[in-house]
Image: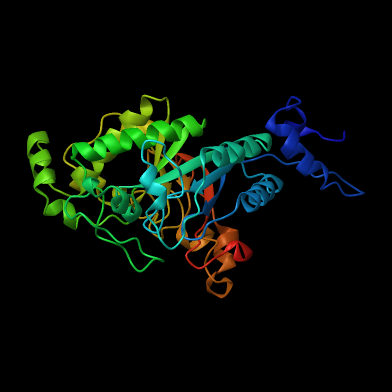
Length: 347
């Protein structure tokens, strides 16, 4: 039997043809290696913000993913340092950085999505909110809590306190304009909305946020506001039949600091866990905890961050890594390639 097992049973034209071919070329003279995925979500991330990645490079990245049987491309498109995705209703976004003016046009995105589809790879766009958003604030300062001028940094230096001002009408309108275009360009089910490293100092001193919290009956100006933001985006994108993905920072304190939880969140949100702190992860922050209920994509920093210097990585940890404990609600995993210090030649 040349190709037995689950891969052989996949119909022609399905992703099994690609992954089955990858198994076929591993045939050795004395035996044939058969395999199939343990997890449905097999992701690789690429940060195209800190350093712009040309289309041809992205295509090579996708080809490498297909060879490795990865099927989910996390395309990091916005951050403090730049906004790389053209939004017709918000054209100033792609011109907010004077250091690097490259961006991805509508046609560029369509080309990448089509190429990925030909390899049976789904593209998950990442639009960072409410933090990691200086490039958006510089273009549209009305979505900030205070201030009318913001500088876009050339590279990353720490975590910035200026973030989007949840509760302002201007931000709701901004989100509608941005995500309306995002779902038009990206046909996949999932949209990553960020949420990591979000200092709440500006919210705590904002009259807009205080008024919103009082009207909504919220107990604090941090985790409660973040929960409300996720709830808003979940409803917004749910209207387009999309599911939001967010980083796991919010969830370390959600159980005891959020006074009003978003209805149905456990069933409708997907968490990408990079910190893996309890209750998301186990005590050593290595795997998703068996009692964690949210659907989760595991991306622990100590095991699968590809931008770290090789000398600093303990590959024994990576090789022994298990995404989740038995019973955990794990969709799969994603290895992350950040590019603060990496040009295409370094990736």
